[in-house]
Length: 322
Image (cartoon, rainbow, N blue to C red; front, side):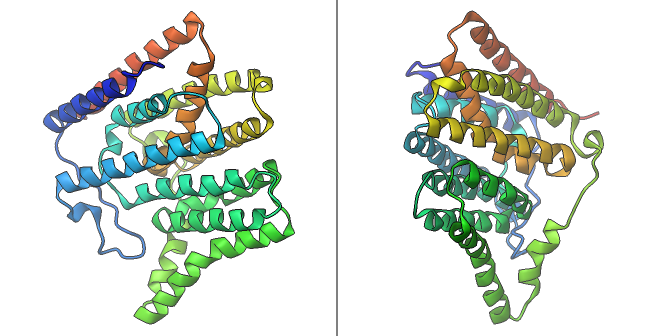
């Protein structure tokens, strides 16, 4: 996995997989629109522009993930390896190919993590948490369900020893600030529905029958990611003593964040595709940690088996539904 040719090989796999999907499967447009302005719909884009926007979002997210890893000193791996794992999961999940405005919440999540991790044991942590929660709040304007990770962020700030009365109040102000601007614009536009729309969406709940709400093929992808995550999680905790204290706390938070997102998918499976986007950075980090810190033959077999299973799932998703 540490070879310099890893990323070029993955890019070649991505191109082949995308071309294969475009040829075999019918063109599918995203159906969602921007929650504040319903007329801004991704379905109105030409398909080439739609996919280009999706690719640009993931390239930006991959860059932010690498920078987050380097600046927080989470993993000591080549940046190409982390990017390769990130794009491999995207490649073998064709449901992620099309662009939707909810994908912008992934960029907001990564930017918010920058400030959250930088707040570690800071005396001036209030400014970091203010920016972290403000950016996370902007993310909720694209995916209102992101609001349910606010308690996770508060727990994370406690884990990073940066939460106190002052920083807690700063977090509240930071989260409210984007909505204050939205409310101001709603009054200016004389349309209060602009402000109400995100809160109405937050209150939308689907059924809890995961088999009824999610395509079985997508459910298999979710199951594979969950199994890989659990294996990597236990390995990470097993060699926990070998990490620096700051790195250990950040890894613990990433584990907790992803566990919460997995749980959210189980409770609200109708948001499986949207939450899968948010899972990709944390899952990529934990799985990279597993493969970079294990040199045994078993880990090699697990890696090969993972590639084979991802390829099988990719083929299943391209098969027509009877």
